[in-house]
Length: 295
Image 1 (cartoon, rainbow, N blue to C red):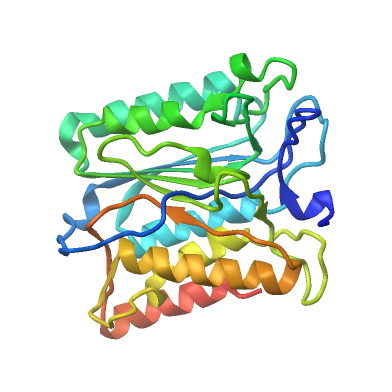
Image 2 (tube, rainbow, N blue to C red):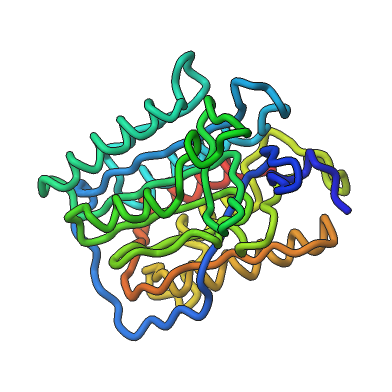
């Protein structure tokens, strides 16, 4: 049995929060490759909640690192010129009202036609309700009133589905991430299956204590988006390739380091997600990725 500090989960017996990663459907079949639109038409909303106001659990150690590496990866590899970060690092931020107000405002902005790609990323505490729904915890979440004070992952998926953008990605890095439902037109990238924890990175080789490094899932996701998932070497990373790359590496590393299971899941899609630059531009991005992700 892993110690609590190693991963985020909320046991239903006491309904206490402790998570950090997610996942979804397997078996992606990419039949065609579609070119993504120009790099300046992507917007991302990144949400990171490390702790709860009630302080029932210690803060998640890797949330800040998750947000940092996602910002750098989306800017440098996915063409995101507009990135909105919602974090409980700032006093009064990360509450239910703060997250939902800013998320809706960003999606309305995207819906007006300025962007053709929208990313929503969440890293933090989560749990499944008794009816199986995955809910995400803002800082002011009340463990006694989860249904009223947490944010349903399916609500975010539906908001994305209602947003008039060509590409819509929902990335969940939390416990039981695979319990989220992919609404029509939304690709979900989940750190784990519906009944699995999501693991933090160990602080040192061989140790099982959490560190301030990005989580297992976010680390391999960003490495894949950085170009390592270009399995057929065609200078493009499809969602099919990304899913295969992240799933294999996360499952292998968790098995080796924690003797446990974590299998990311991705909903079906047929689009190219990254076009990899060549020459000096590619070298600059490789250097950045190595600095960001080295443990």
